[in-house]
Image (cartoon, rainbow over all chains, first blue to last red; front, side, top):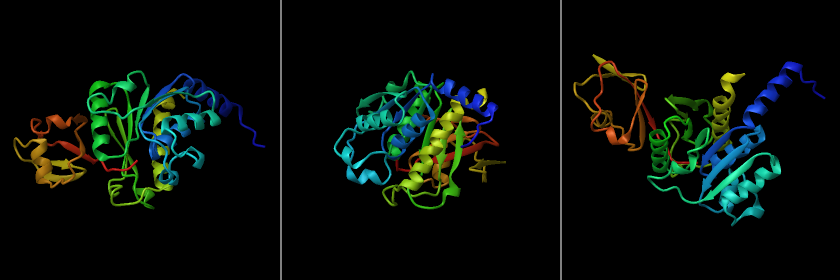
Length: 204
Length: 66
């Protein structure tokens, strides 16, 4: 059994206490979004606002946080169920809807941090621009270049004001390369780690 | 006179807009996030915003996948 030093225990309690008051918005519940959500739930986040319009398909299971028995279910509902099994103290507002141009920012007006976890380059760009324009004080954590295998060392975080981008500039589009668990989950958890840094970082 | 784009030195061109610069540097990806010095430039302003002398520019490609 590991004995946690007393100051480390205090630190964990401090983090838990901060996160138990925070809300994170997640746009997309696919490879990035489902893994970010689970990672944040495990960390003890109070509330998640998750938006997606898809249902779970068999082809999603190579990287997304769903199970065989959930095929055909709405992704947001399936993810809410999975989070309940992991940490019942994390509550979820789920919105089963496609984000549409011009109002993509609207579900996220009351969150502390918003995560861009969408798939097409066009939707990602539009979403980031809308958040930066309509919610200029809300930090946004995005990802670009999640396809492929290997090359983990190319991943960096780029920052533009309130935008934090997990970025592999040499990755190919998912139209031309594979999407597989290791790199997608790596970048999703990199996003979750930035979220924690933004929420907890300078308080400790 | 020069500017830097993604840490690379590039000639400064007077009155060049973001749109012109992206074209000159052959950024064929239409979907990018552009930062000049510390500021984000919205896509709707690419043909208005002019690149200042000594600008430090970052161009981030948005690549599909998620």
